[in-house]
Image (tube, rainbow, N blue to C red):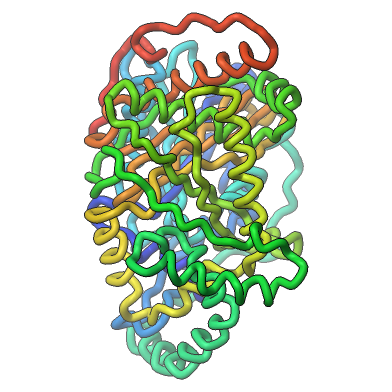
Length: 507
């Protein structure tokens, strides 16, 4: 048995009828490279069956402690059924990208079954040109971005022929699932250690309290931030004071910053990684700076078109891995966050990229000055018995008052070489991430080969068309090409670049 950390458990705690704690990916494959020219659910089951020993979270089943006295545990499911988790679906002709995203949005807006290991994989047939999609959902309590990539590396191969996989050292039989009485005993025995864990967190948490996402939305937080910054400078020693100063900015409200519904919208598309790199070289920035600037420009244009652009810059949360080399291969969450002002108020695209670069540099300096375990330590303050209620109540309260932030932007580096699954070549790998009350828009990007794959997830009733956001992202890259390299801007379709079959993605 393996107990969840307080941070892992928070991803379970935030779930309700409208908010889901899983993250996902949508992979598009060309099955013509597979041995029989096809990719079916039985092919995926066979491949996964041979590699389950490389995928521990796929066999973990959740076991709760009665009355929430302590954090839940993972146990190896003795009744694991691979066929339950691998499912087949299809979209009707003509099988457009819009139809695919509509189907995936529906699948994404379904909670995972907590009586089983917390993942599902859908093999989706019927795409244009004979392609096949795999949509994989895994609960965030089991994996973060880095460990999610490790799962992909176990599934994908460098050639259509596959690779030799060492068999497991022993046959899989699962573990005995303890009963409620035994788990209650574990919870009671663990009670004395909970205040000890909280006290151990104090030195790292209190001086960095205002670095928690949404902390400045609470009354008095700005004053507290200024008071603590002196202590932080003394603790950090040689780190410049301006690098340690916590941002006191408040997120302005937009129409995607209220309570969310159970329904989602999704759009997916690609931009050229080589073009992004050319812009970053010409501008003297980084790939991540350019990606954040593209998202900033897309959101700015989208809000202008709807007469909803605030005069203040928006606040974006950017997840950051704090996983060390020694922690690779260890599943669970080792993440931090950066809260960054994105210059949606800036009209000039060159200045917008320059300000994005400066804002990210400042945020990185603040992030490096706080403990890597800040989020884990901070969640340790909350007694497990009230963690779920506290998490959901806080998020709902902030969503109905002043939002803690406006959106999530994430950029995940991916492989540059072609990859294959059961012999089928991977063409695109779109992240499909999560939203929650108060933050109804998530723009996540993963690079693969020579392109960057955008997955834009939003609440159906807060964002009327995520395809427009995707197209404005491409427009923003064209604009930066024109500014820095003098290239002519490419024409765009009036419907925001959306594929011919318009999809609402209602679930």
